[in-house]
Each structure stands twice: as structure tokens, then as C-alpha cells.
Image 1 (cartoon, helix red, strand yellow):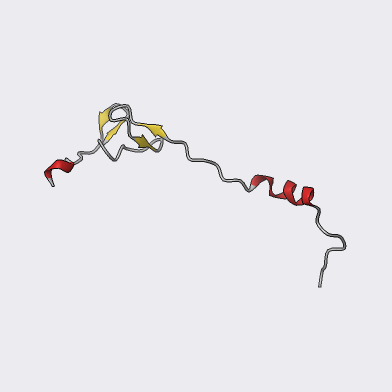
Image 2 (cartoon, rainbow, N blue to C red):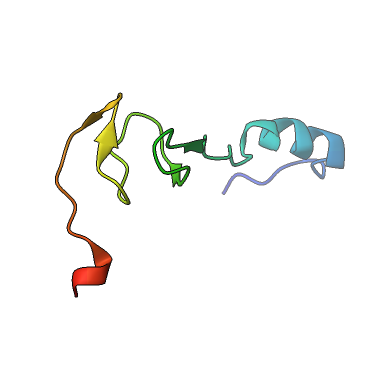
Length: 63
């Protein structure tokens, strides 16, 4: 069975794990209703995408 001859140092371990960080999501805001929206997606609140109405959203007040 293969066993390491020397203990892995903290710097070598940190160098190996340097790319294991989590990148934050890029949040943008809808120009119509100012709600946070992921890029290249239709706004869930107002249904707008690229300056036009992409989907018809039912009003929450009608429920």
C-alpha cells in the first residue's frame, strides 16, 4: 500500500486547494421593478426581459 514518506505541509496543502473556493453569483437588478434577477433570465416579479414583456405574470392582489 502506498504511504506518503513525509507529512504534507500547510503551504503545499493550501496551494493544492487554492482553486476550491466558491464564486459568488452575479446578481443584477431588473430595470423595470428593481428586484434582484440572475443575468440572462426573465424577471420573476414583472416578467420583463431585455426591455419587453416576455411572460404575462398574474397579479398577486387578485388571489
